[in-house]
Length: 338
Image (cartoon, rainbow, N blue to C red; front, side):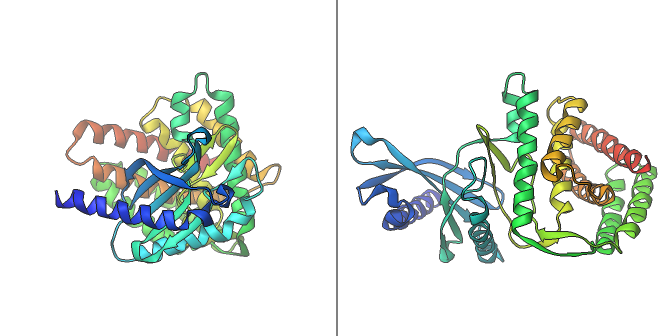
């Protein structure tokens, strides 16, 4: 009961703040009276999301649009994280504001005391869900992956920084630690040694190369990229990290591969989706395959450790996850040798 009262109190506070600022958020209302209607509330690992519809009070005019309020779960650094995400949205928004096909939620407000960001409410379905829902999805889904690549390229171009070498040494040390723990979860020690050796070779190659650098999204995956018709919208912009752009590219490619962990998508279709994404990002430009492979390896090891850790105490699920990740690791090693 106390929790429910607290939730209602927070909801009332949010609604009051939004109503006071509604004319600033939506000047197209022209001062007409409007009301806010809660249309959804979602709990995530690190935040709560409240969705509101803005309804004109004249019944014949219907809804004027929507607002989204993302409140970060109270913990150390929550306010700084909220601030960095809001700043990233604000600084990046101009690069997407005039595009009809590439977008991100328009930033509207920041409430520091609530660790809350206010944005426009966006429509759409994640690319991860789209592959499950669209009848005969291949052509449309491939086009959406190409759009995801174009979105990411625009973001990186808008936030570009001087090139610099990859922090390969730190990543190799992290990979070595993760591989030791993966062995404890049953991943083949021989395969872990192969991964370590191949990553060391790639890391040595990359440590002296200047790579294109920009702000990195930090979680650019098929879960965080939405499609609304032909429009591509990316969510959860991080705003804190500046590093090689290949981090986001590797993250997206790994997320494509991870679809098969829970849904029977053909390897052929995923391979074509990978090519569509890379084509959307690079066009006819060449790219550093070693950087992609290196960051895919280090990133996939981290993801495998997280997922296998959640499967402890679930023998069948753990067995399936081990088989899945061992296959993905072998594919990465084989690809690096060709």
